[in-house]
Image 1 (cartoon, rainbow over the protein chains, first blue to last red):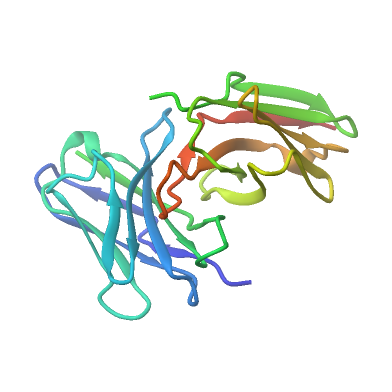
Image 2: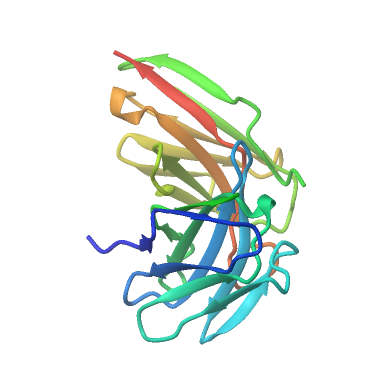
Length: 114
Length: 114
């Protein structure tokens, strides 16, 4: 069964460093998302991506964040200058397209900023 | 921002009995509701969903009920099995946009005792 994959599973970085989190969505899906979950809190929406552009972003998704689909398979989230409060699980998700509302999530990347 | 609320942080049931997980929402623009299951160190796994035009959807042991007037939905698992032990998230989508970003509740930890 097709699944969303994410790498790395765990990333440790120092404050102020740039990180890139990688995702491979399910191949025939059209909509892509990033969510995050800070320890003990809800899963929160960050950004949605469709047709090679951001379709919606949350207040959390400020200028330090960017997303890219550099080729036909990868979907990346970049944080330019990490802060301690960026420490969280980051989940990538994909959705087939019109008429399908369910999103399929990857296993997540645990980001630890020290 | 508590648009989706799961007021029970945990629930414990005996194997073979019914598990009922509850969820309330406040945003009238939500028109699609989903339940996800999450094991530790994994991403959320889609379980079952319901459109706001329906009041019930069933898939095997899982049934979701929607009461629009009360802005309440519930997930019934019958019979419960030890493998069902996980965190269950209620999520809602719609909010008038087309991206169908998900708004999650905090989750309920279900423990099914053998």
